[in-house]
Length: 277
Ligand code: C2E
Ligand code: MG
Ligand code: MG
Ligand code: MG
Image (tube, rainbow, N blue to C red; front, side, top):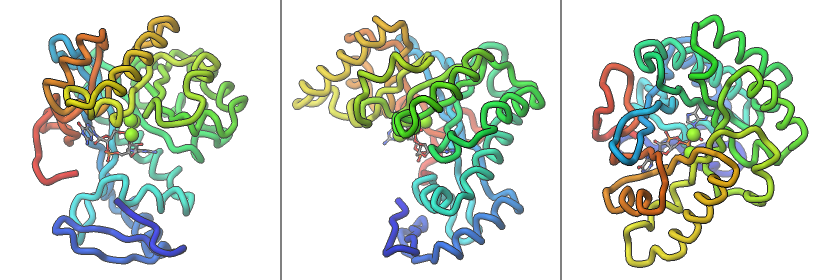
C-alpha cells in the first residue's frame, strides 16, 4: 500500500518489500512516462454466479508494470494519481485498454465493470465522453457497468444523480462498490439508479468463522434491502468455500474473489498468478 509519508512523499514497496521513498513530483513524472510508454495494464477478475461458478462478467483492475519495481497494484499509485489530478488521464487510458479486450472477454452476454475515482466522476464531460468511447470501441452499452463508491455519490448527491441518470438512460449499469463502508448507506441507495450493490469484503471475510454473527446480520440486512429495491448483489472478496456456502444459504446470488479467480491479464484466463498483486 502506498502511504503518504509526510506531505509530499509516497512510499513504494517493490516485490521483495524493499521500500523506496519517492517524491510525489517524481512519481507524477513517472506516471506520465508510464502513460506514454504504456506501462499500465488492465487485469480482469471474474464475477460469478455463486450457485455454479458460472462467469457473468469481469471487473477491470489497473496494474502498473513498473520497469524497476515490478507489477504495482492501484493502492501503490492511485492515491498519488488522485492527488496530482493525473487520475483522469489514467482512468481514460484504462477504459481504452479494457474496451480493447472487451470483445474477446465478454462475448455477447457478459458484463464489463470499470472503476472511477471520485474527482474524475464529477468532471463535467464524464458521461458524454464515456458514451462516446463506448460507441467508438463497439462495446454494447448494456454490457458496461460503472462501479462508483458511496463517497463519490455523497460528496455531491445532486450532481451524482444527474450523471448517473444520464448513463442509466443510455443503458449503462451502475454498481455501488464497497457497499457498507461509507456513511448513510441505507438511506441513500434509493436516490440513485443503481442496478447492483457490491458488498464490501470486510463483511465477507468473517463469514464461515466462529465470530461471524455480526457479519451474517449485516449481509442479510443488505440482501433484504437489495431484494426490496430490486437490486442485484455481488459479494466481494470471497476467498473460501465456507464463505461461499454461508452466502448461498442467505440467498446471495453473485460473488467475486480469489476463490473464483484472481485478477489476471487477458489471455491467462482466470489463472492464479502467484506473486502478483
Ligand atoms: P475495488 O474496486 O473494490 O476492487 C476489488 C479489490 O479487491 C481489488 O484490489 C481486487 O484485487 C481485490 N480482491 C478481489 N478478490 C479478493 C479476495 O478474495 N481477497 C482479497 N483480499 N482481495 C480481493 P485492487 O486490484 O488492488 O484494487 C484496489 C482498488 O483500486 C479497487 O477496489 C478500486 O477502488 C481501485 N481501482 C482499481 N482499478 C482502478 C481503475 O482503473 N480506476 C480507478 N479509478 N480505480 C481503480
Ligand atoms: Mg470496484
Ligand atoms: Mg469493490
Ligand atoms: Mg474495494
